[in-house]
Image 1: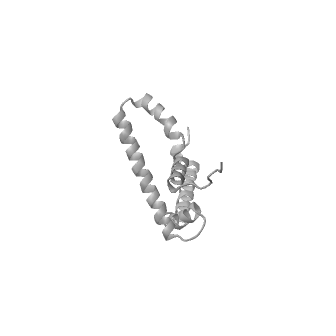
Image 2 (image 1 turned 30 degrees about the vertical axis):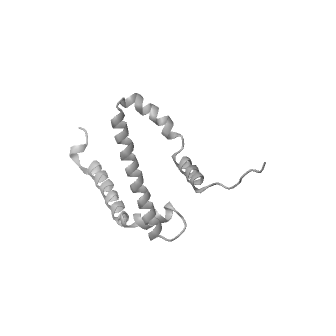
Image 3 (image 1 turned 60 degrees about the vertical axis):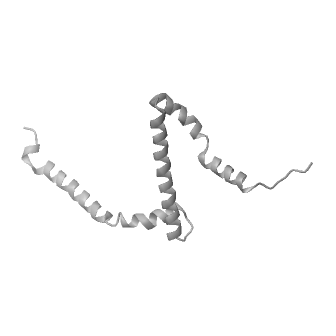
Amino acid sequence: MAINSKISWKTAAGLVIANMIGTGVFTSLGFQLAEVQNTWSILLLWIIGGLMTLIGAFTYAELGTHFRKTGGDYIFLSGVMVYLFWDRPLESLAGLGMVGLGLLIFLFDKRTKPD
């Protein structure tokens, strides 16, 4: 009897889905039922979590079509986050100035020294 080494696309899709979801679904649901004890609120939370995951997947798909380099998260974050943190040197200078001001007030202000 020969072993069939080919799998169908349904079996392959099932293996990928099972690998992505994992066993956390089965273990965490028991803890949730013990704490919440309301099936509808747990179902609502799972739907909200699924929608958030879907939005994250769409975001990664859009980033993957925009940045056509290999590197995954590093390329995505370095290309996107650079616009959020362009003012980092200014923040560092402002923080250093506040530390210096606090030190000067501590050293030279008469109101902060004990009698």
